[in-house]
Length: 181
Image 1 (cartoon, helix red, strand yellow):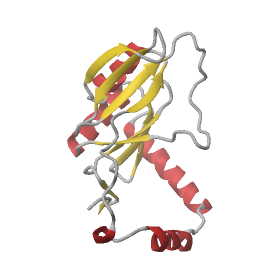
Image 2 (cartoon, rainbow, N blue to C red):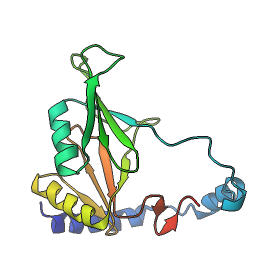
Image 3 (tube, rainbow, N blue to C red):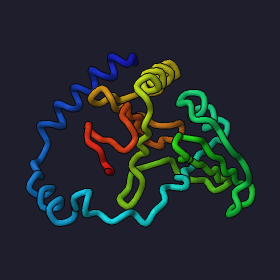
């Protein structure tokens, strides 16, 4: 399927979703009024950032090829997982000192990814517009199904079904608005 076909299919999906939308703006306004402090009144975060996000994979080499070769995130370390003998723990540099880590758990017979409450939905990764376009081309050439949204966002899955989003938007921005001040 070409990138244009994916865009056309996405437009059809968006039209169908628009018909099913429920207006929750009053609920969101109430939550913002109750919990969202103006930037000047917000306390500093107690966190220093995400050290790494650890995901699972079924095949270490396949995962390296996907993240390093298709997405351009260099592999920076690989060693045995300290918590599970024979398991690999490896890391990709996703920019700005952030790391995406993976484990393989051979011999555990893990089931494929599925979405569950309390579970994981997707990882959104910020890239430049140039890298966004280049990554989408590489993914399409590799046969990865890509769903583009609003021109700056693209959703797809890695070889194990982990949902990813590439954003051609500056880090800390969403929909043209700063998320942190």
